[in-house]
Image (cartoon, rainbow, N blue to C red; front, side):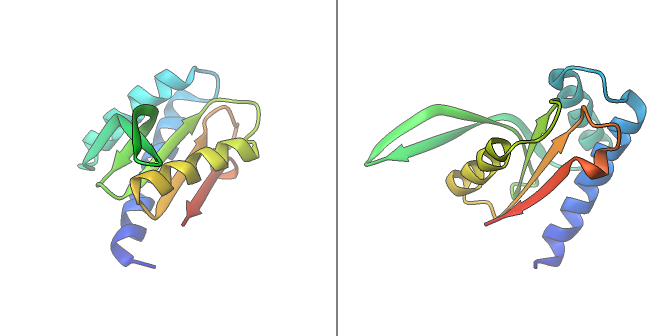
Length: 125
């Protein structure tokens, strides 16, 4: 594993834990997204928020097929949820983002959980 990517994912996880610690588990996903973007900024992490993820099908490019919650440091896809539990479809969504962005690592966080470290997944292609 790339040590630089490991360092970035550790910083992302730390930021997400900080947001969850401060806000708790009862908010809408959009609140966590805004707060996490702010935390990334405070920590000096370069990120893009709500970035389009085009899908290509037989030479057809669908520009607005998906939007990533975050693309951090140009290499890590970060997807947020605020749901009762993470499902396989949430993991499949992140893997799809990885495929079409050509990124290798994705982090999936469920902020509705009472303990964020039990409700996050690290996914890789």
